[in-house]
Length: 114
Image 1 (cartoon, one colour):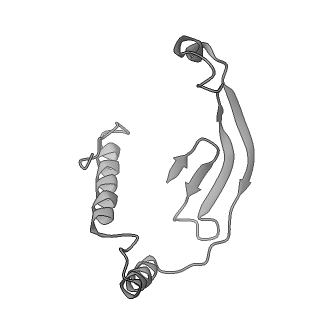
Image 2 (image 1 turned 60 degrees about the horizontal axis):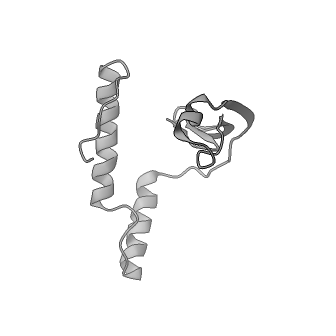
């Protein structure tokens, strides 16, 4: 899975246990959109940035164990859990849209939940 942000790009490779998350200092720098008008923005130069890559070492653990531990902690603390049923439905919605996108050769598939 690749997630591009305004400052970094995160690559998660679940098939590579020695280097699952990789953070790349890559991106696109644009002029400050607040300092120029809409017409000028279309003509503004784009600067591509490619820098270092960091692969943080994260401990291996089973995801369900972590979720269950956090859920038990939320019960003890009397607070809402970080991942509730609504969060689970959102994850399923994203996974379903990704599957449909693959079926349609990378087409954008909207999420059902909005």
